[in-house]
Length: 140
Image (tube, rainbow, N blue to C red; front, side, top):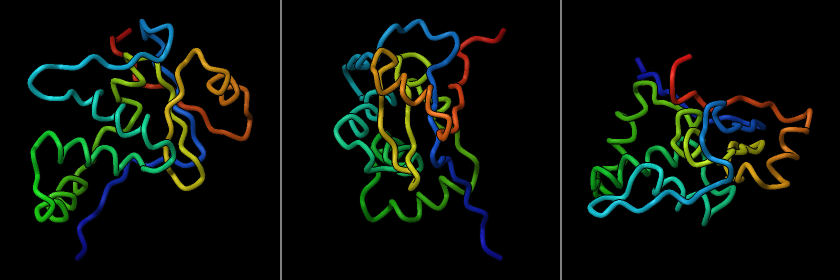
């Protein structure tokens, strides 16, 4: 029996910033001294490589980086990582705290858009793109 593989990928979907975000514009996550934060790694990968990676690829890369996984360990670790459900980009600090929307194209590849940008507004106004909100930081 094959193990179930979970995915966090979306297609033709735009993740809006969280309702309760305090951000007013897309903001680069601040650097931490000892180890890069999840937000920092996600931001670096997405801002330098728009529409290159899927959500699964980004989330696993963050996991591999933060756990210092060698290349040889990654395939096995990836299977184990996705054998249980992972939080999708609706829970990312980029969409909850730092003011970025995330667009997933028809291939599931992602790009970041600051909430202050024209492109962000265009995604909100585009009826052919499914919209979902990022998770709230606080409970109502």
